[in-house]
Structures are given as structure tokens and as C-alpha cells.
Length: 277
Image (cartoon, rainbow, N blue to C red; front, top):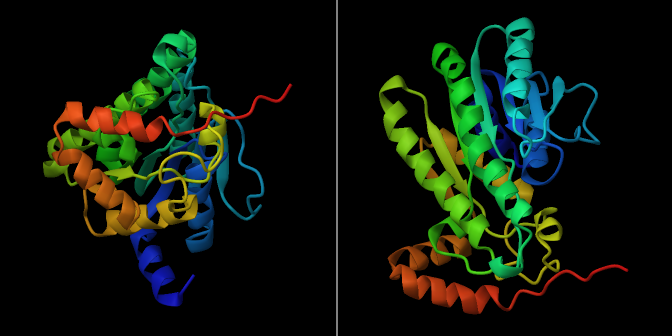
């Protein structure tokens, strides 16, 4: 990382004493943790996810709280554990909340596993709202910021990934609305919209790696850097990568029915993952 870039990113984190990240065991969430490790190894981090992150430096002050967001009741228990850790180990200073966890599925809704579709809503929507709501009093009292990871799928209907795209549209619009509500309190909210990235998302969604439209996009590490840069600039929304910016802008101005029809043609080219027998 160039020295000037490292310096500017370090400046973003200098006033924070703790970070709470969801889904830090892999993908973009893990990239956030790696970036923080590179910039401020002394920063206290709580990771809320099912699995503990691997290959993390032992010098990093990382605490893992096991939590399955698709299971009712685990979110509240997990956040209570996070608050206990914060109060005990870093009782003062600003807190950065990064709502990153999410997943999707690929295929016609008629053929989908309904439990999995409802799970998408649990993880991508309910958990984000519940975690933010439970932590917001602490963030307001101590100062802090919120980063919510949405998606470029939020800008148009996404046939064959209908539930996922709609869930990310919720995250985007909810984040922007929350930002306005919290403006007077000085608590910034940033919505981050990556395009397809090389994470475990595609495999879990049942998509063949590299076959999704725009599948050669920015990396998870890029998303983490762009997010911190946007937070430092006081932005409320950032789309990661110039190609994704163009796609999002174009989709935003199209009539929704046209955007849905176009998305159907593009997403329909996606190849399902090969089933290993």
C-alpha cells in the first residue's frame, strides 16, 4: 500500500477505539479486518459471525462472538456479548459498526428453497436493522459511525436473484434514510455498493465462479479501502468501481419495468454452479 494512501486511511481510524463487524470470517468482512490490522493493529475489533476469522495476526485485538443471524434470538444475544466486551475492554471512544453479513441465491423463485429465501431476509434485512438498533444508543453516547454493505443489485429489480436484490435495495434506502435522521447527532451512515466480487458469495448462491455479469469487478480488499475513503469524505453512498458506477447510474434512470427486463436478460446468462456428485 502506498505511504500516502496508508496515511490517509489511518487518519480515518485514528479517533475510533473499537470496530464491530459482522461476517468477518470471509470475503469483504475479512478484508475490513485485514485492512484495520494493517492500519491500526491496536484497534479493538469484535467479529459477529458463525465462524472465527482465520489467518489473522495474533497481535490483533480481535474478539469473536459466534452468531448465526438466520436463527431467531441469536442476534440479541450476540450484541449483548459485544456490548459486554466493549464495556469491559474499551469503555470509552468512538465505535465503528460495519454491517457486512449477507448472502443470496440464484434461480427462479418458483424453484427456490423457501426457507433459504426467508433466511436471506433474516440475514440481509432483519439482522442489519436489529444489530444497528441495539448498538445505536452506545454509538450515540460514545460517538461513532455506521457502514452498511449493500450492493449494486440494489439499483434495479434482479430477476433470478429476486429476494437478494430486493433485500439490498432495502439496505440501501434504509441506510440513506437513517443517515438523514442521524445527521443532527453527528453520527455518519455510509451505504457501500460493491458489484460482483471474488468472495464465497457466488458459491453459496449457486452461481458458477466468474459467470455473473461484471464478475471481474473490484476485489474485497478494494471494497474495504473504498469504504474507509468514502467514510472519511463524509459520503452517504459509494459504488465501488467505475464500471459499477455506470451500471448503477444507468439502472437508476430506467423505468423499473425496463430495468427488470434488461436485468433478466443479463442475469439469465449466469451459469449455475456445477453440482459435485
